[in-house]
Image (cartoon, rainbow, N blue to C red; front, top):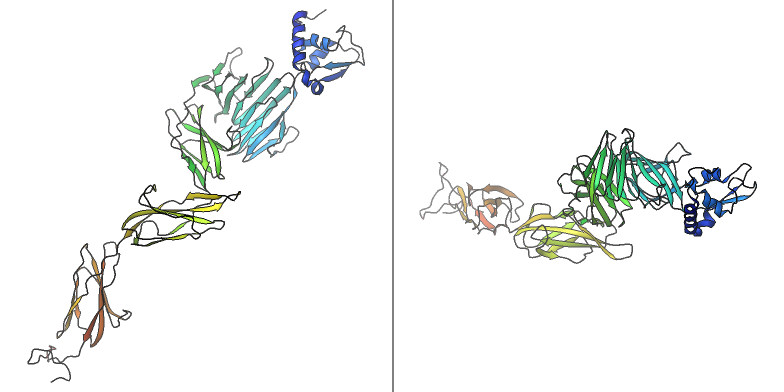
Length: 563
């Protein structure tokens, strides 16, 4: 008696013919052979080998079996690949960044995961902080495993000839994103399970995460995802998420539209810091966190940095120089990622800019010529200097070609405020000139020295007091520095003072030859040039009993030896 579930002969014939013609190219590699044993019949073998046991008539026709209940023991029965049920498959590891391990089903200890490796059904993946893994399943679907994720490949089944696929991922914590190929039939499936819900798709671009409290978080960018809460009553319909929707599932399913792509206009096009990648993000409406990824390829498969930030600033360890793709999604209050914003990002941090030595920040340099000095590094073939009046270097005063030494003199600078910076130049792997980023600008002021005052006038001949006076230059106020020395090199000082007024008084020094000079100092402590030294001759003199000078009849002081 024929089983009641067997369809009509005409429908079975059409189905079998369609399947056989569709898989002819793969038959040589995929067909299975069964040696008939006593008691075998076509119905039992269909249950054993076929993806859909109701397709037993196609198996009968393919093997030209006259009676499905009576098979000759020892004969060979060929099972076409197009009819066979999916077999265990493997996933190819396309990319690994950062720490990531795999525990294979036959092992108890995790091992480092490497690109090019194949992982089988039942394997457990652990991706550490700032790590990232990209997998390609047997049907071409791509799964991206983010930092901080623990994932088990619960089911990996594939029938290449028919395209049947059965993929199941168990997400314990973290996040996965998937681009799933359209499933060929209702018997194919792709599911992501979390402790509280399961999401099933038929061909879509979507993501699933496990929240800190264990809730399921899903978002759909293309296609649709059926979400069912594991704790829901039997027969519950769940929720069908369409493109542009997300959901959080705990005790209930909360569906929400995805946030708009974040504004990345504030992100610099070029990152020049060799120690840190620091990217400012906009605080868009409804955003509570930001999911950020940096990839080294246009398809964003080779993710090299990824993390979620609670503040609108993404900070990562530095990367090698090159061009990258930056992808950012804003997370709403439920933790559901919104639509993705993508832009190009260039890292140009090498060769590293030299350290600027002189002039230092905020220093005052004497006009008109300014010496610029910086540190030198091995492997650098040149240094390029810029001096400008503004921090954006739009008003350039000087710009050099590549110089062999990290030093340069800028001549004829007028008094005023300036900034300077330097970039190093090296050769890349192809021997081409490669200029690195400019150093951070350093501001300095060019100032003119206070003018030299006129030579001082000396008074005091015939008295016990020396008085020195001179005229202050315009442009003050000045302080006045005076030196009285025994020698004209002013190494043997007799007196030295800082004065607020251009005058100096002191007791007449002992008999001898002296030299006097003065200079002016501005309010910032900058000293000008010295005046021309003045020579002072102090002669001996005769005094009265009360220490007053003895005056001759001509009204002049009487010196020793005179009459």
